[in-house]
Amino acid sequence: MEEDGEVSELIANRRFQFRFMRHEGWENALFVHWPVDAMVLKAKLPNGLEPDILDGFAWIGLVLLTERGVSVTPAAGRKIAPKIDHFGANIRTYVRHKGIPGIFFFSLECSSYFATLGARLAGIPYFPARMRRTVDIECPLLTTEELALRGSGTSSTSQSSSRCFPSPVSNASSKVEDQKGSFSGADFIFEFSSERCNGGPTVSARWRLQCTGGASAGMEESDLVRARWFVERYSVYAAWPWGRGPLLLRGDVTHPSWPLQSATLDELDAEQLLAAAGFPELGLEVARSKDDHSSLNAPHICFSRGVGPVDFWMLEPP
Image 1 (tube, rainbow, N blue to C red):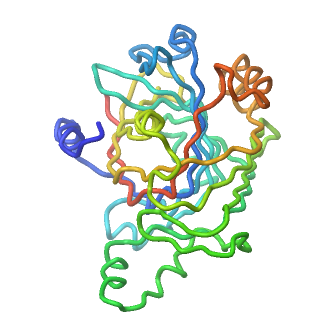
Image 2: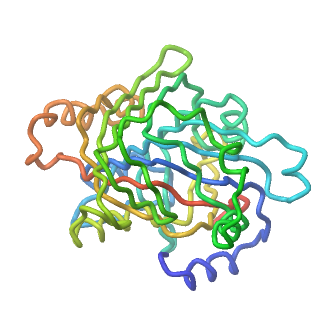
């Protein structure tokens, strides 16, 4: 579904031609993926979903990111309804139904109670969590209007006022960003931690981003192809109600392609979250392979400065 034509055809064939939500951006996203046995995964999926296979394996992903400007889609509604910014962490896998590839979420941690409640009602397993992150810079993607202003040489004050969260102290001497996400200067350092509000599972990570030019900086072609298989997904499947079924639903999203680049994962503690999502064996393997990056379960890692806007189309029976 990477090509615009395929995504347009997917949307055109929907029963409900209704966009109900927009995110202004998904930003500073770390993607970590592990291969798993497809038959093990299939036993954990709702009826009607089949594991999507890459290189002979199904895959489990951990994604840590910032979601900015979450609100309803109609322009009039966005002027009234508050726009929510929050952190997120999710455990997901990749599936197919009737040939249409998509994502199925086992759990999603969210720092906004309001966003959590809305997603729960739609059958997506969100959990409220206390979350913290430090990042080199919170620099939202520019809107079309802001890009036009930049191109004309006119300054825009909306960028600083629309930041997701207060910018932390910088840890690099040079932070020059273009719209494609290329940087110059020393490595950028990111840290992320989350704990469910009920005292449930935690996840934490620390990673570095090298400041080399180009949207796919540091990624070999084979890694980039694999990364695009993970991230260029334009459908989400859910089991309603409460994420358990029995009704299978599919929602679709539209957004630009993810700009991707390599990252170095220095620390990761995801065992509790993986176990809570139903993969305790994978959690144990991840713990064992922390110092053995040549093992089968060594994760595939990539990073994106983000995409936006992201439009959500109403969930419907597939």
